[in-house]
Image (cartoon, rainbow, N blue to C red; front, side, top):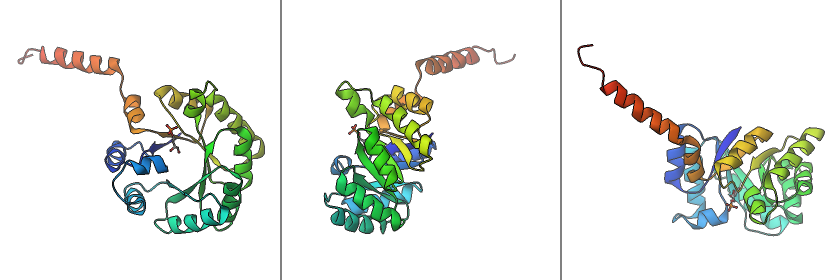
Length: 216
Ligand code: E4P
């Protein structure tokens, strides 16, 4: 499973990339609003740090506006993927952009039918938001299972990005299902690495090693 980092924070991206676990980045307008730089400058900087796909979201709600924004965003760097909300105009825009060879990530997906339509319109990626479904007592992972089944049934090439991940169990379940990608907040990346038994084990090994007599 590929791992994307779900942040627009340069320090977090650099840190995660230095560990060697990051295949791409997803951003959204909320994440961008937390940073000080202009969106275009931020996207350019992120694309120079991460060679994999970097999702940058459009703001327009009409298909022609989305397409115009997408064309401009895709000129920032080769690895920009244009994020488009999963509404009727978003599907229209995705179809046009896929014919132009501009990669899209259809976002704010909350149903398998939305994901089916996104794939039919040539979306490169689909982003089902599992955490937000869990938040309203629906099972987000069931949605991933359904999309995976549907895409397998018809051989769609659209890659599933498990989004709105809140904890390590979400990552584990995404991998069990065989999702293509999990996009993970920096905090959850750190949680994936940590295990208390690893820390206890290291401490004990070092203590025992130090107790070995010098002249042994
Ligand atoms: C993914 O593309 C989104 O940026 C993100 O995962 C949304 O997560 P949230 O529901 O925690 O805001």
